Image 1 (cartoon, rainbow, N blue to C red):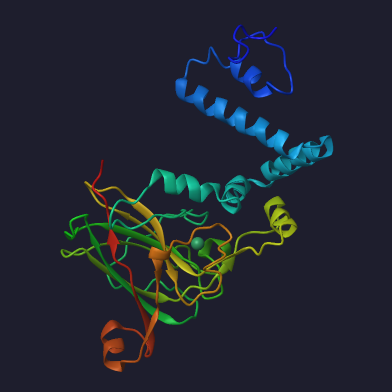
Image 2: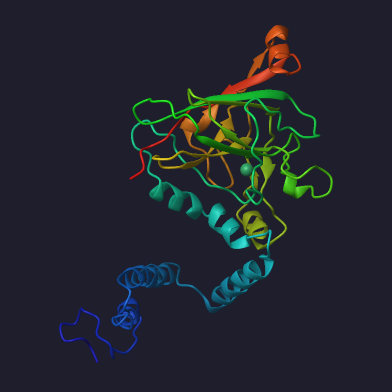
Length: 299
Ligand SMILES: [Fe+2]
């Protein structure tokens, strides 16, 4: 039962290798949701094209089903293996980038990551968020502005990061106070924020699951370069979810989740100035990094 014009799919056309995608897409003709129909049609076309491109074997199809099943079984309240799979295939970054195209001088976005699982506690500007862990003391400061360079007083700056061993507080339950290395700051009248902490270390994404096995099969390492997470929000402006990356970290050019953007890399510069350190309440020497954030107007 070929379609009348030989090209357009028609419900009732029988499945063939050549027109497999068209036949399946024809079954979507009565889908009442146009967006769902568009997404599913594209998914079917790409999936069929992929299977034909690699001439997928039945054994490979079974292995793929088993892999996805394992990925689902690995998920629980604190572990999301499907997001991890999306991350290591670059899909999370692609979705993030498409949905938050930075215009002009606006700060670029990157992935949220899996560790924003507890609310950051509100803290005073200048607070020390380093918790009980040791590490290189560091001042983080910056200014939140709008697209015309105007300061944004009261902008909320939510930060969280790993410790000097590469672990987040939630990965050390019962050993460090919850919300260590996290803070929610309110920018001052000039849009400025600052806080004290320690320099974070690079860390591996979780590899004790199917995604770890996949990375191994691809001979890829699991590491993310050292970074501090930011979510910056303000009334009237589009929020940005992003990272500040340490220019001195390894893995900047091979982030396991492809999260690095050049505009987000900063130097944690050493400062040997005892008087300034004392004024800030930091040991001397310390390190200092500046990260200005420019928000776009809300659309
Ligand atoms: Fe992170």
